[in-house]
Amino acid sequence: MKKIIAFLSFILITSCQITETIRLNPDGSGDIVSEQFREENSYMELAGESYGSENIFQDTTYVFNAYIEKYKETFLKYTPEEQKLFQTYANVKVHLKKSSFEKEFRNTFSLHFNKVSEIPDLYKTDDYADDLENNYALTAETHYYKISYDFDGKIFKRSVSIINAEELQKAKDGYKNYESKYGNLKLIQFYTLQYHFPQKIKSVSNEKAVVSSDKKSLTLEFKLSDCLRDPEMTNLEVVLE
Image (cartoon, rainbow, N blue to C red):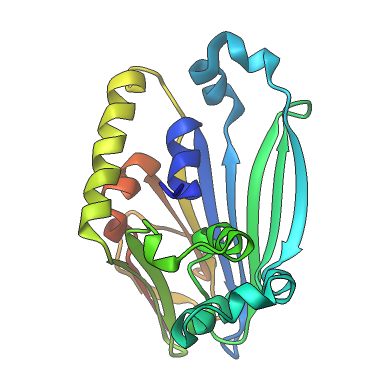
C-alpha cells in the first residue's frame, strides 16, 4: 500500500514550508489553519530542467464529513474506535491546490473549534479521506507521531508523542538519503508556529519563541528537517497572565 504518508513525501520530494496558526478566543474556542506550500525558488533547484515542463492542475475543496457521507458503507466497516477517529475530522475544511501554470502548490487544512482539545492531527486529514475513498485499513498507516492540544484558560499545551518508533526510524533513514543527495543545496524548509492568545503571555517553554510587543502572540520557527527527525522538539507550553 502507499503510505510513506503524503505529508512526509511532500516534504522530501519538494522544498516545503509549513505554517500552523491558532487563534484562541477568551472562551477557549478558536480557529486553526495549517498550510503546507512549496517554496518555488528552492524547488526550482531540486527540479532542474524539468521545472519548466510541469503540467499539473488540481484545485479541490472539501469538508471531511462529505467523505464520511459519500463512503458511508466503507465508514461502517471500520471499528467503533476508528469511526470515532474519523468523526473528529468531520468539520475539517481542506483546500488542495497544485498549479504548474501559476506555480502554486499549497495544501490548506482549517477548523473552527469550541475547545482546543477537539483539534485533530490536521496533517493526517487527506490520508484519512483517502482511506475512506479506497477502503484502506487504518492498521496500515505509517504515521509515527501524534499531535494534541490542551488549554485550561491559563496554560496552553501543544503535545507531540511518538506512536511508532519503527516508522520514525524509517523517516530518519529516508531523510538521510535525501540529505546525501540535496544537502548541498540552500533550500528553504521551515516549520512555523504562529499562536494568538486572548491574554498576555507570561512564559513560553521554548526560549526561541518570539513574543509580540503586545505579548498576546508568538512565532516559533524550526528547520523542517529537524522536525522530521525529532517531532517532539515542537512540544510547547505557554502560560498566560
